[in-house]
Length: 375
Image (tube, rainbow, N blue to C red):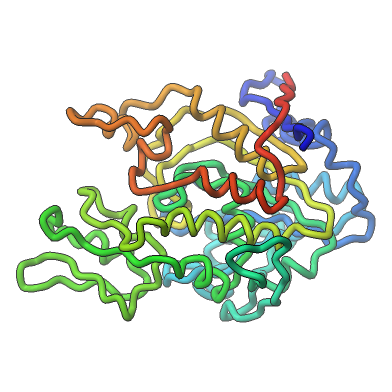
């Protein structure tokens, strides 16, 4: 397969050029204007951030992309699907309130916000998965599939179960309805290693299923009948006391996200943008964000989400880890085991390579890319 082009620019800018203008120049250089958007509905898929989290992308970036879409005659809207766990985005009313509180509204972004899977997370559509090996059909938020053009705007960061969150995760997991998210998470449930549990109860606070209780010895117990397998408790535990029962679960999650991404983008124009900034160790779904594990690196754009994620991974691998961070703390431990990549060094119980390998295998894109730098 021919190498895909990925366009990159850093966050340096001149006194009279804003970063949003620089982003617009980047995506135009990458070819977004070649998409026929005239009179078309254009979905811009992004994450609005959980309440309490401050690492999510600022609405200014969303407006920059929406304005380019409008220049081309398109009708943009920002979109995301509801979450499995309670949090502050479990139904459309909460989700819209959360987006508004976090700064996303028609004034700040220049376009409407539509929660793709409706009020209760049940407004989805069954979409065939091209070359799907693990699922033949995906449950995707209806508004995502009603759009003529699909754009992903991604905050590239760490993730407590997928290793990192980039384009494939934003598209695959993010566009799945609640039923779709359940399907992607159904390959494993975590359990507690009681000898390491400190009884701090942080995992229970993160659990959206009320599946974690504390026994007489003050050790956590995860009820398998209630657990949805979302993995948030794994990321919440600071003592490595929770792991997945299925050793293959992180790999399966990645492969299913790849297959859901294939369902979302197949058969219509699509374009993808990632910003490597505020690289938190965990997902923006958390109601907090720990210190960045890496410095701000830059903005990237491509027609190929796999090549885009691969380029982001490679740039992050070259960056110097921040000492006062989860990654830095792990690397400073006496018996630190170097996994050879920043994602597993930050969250050891994760797996990320299978996501991109499988996405390439089923035709979502290629990991081979040419990086073109814009000054």
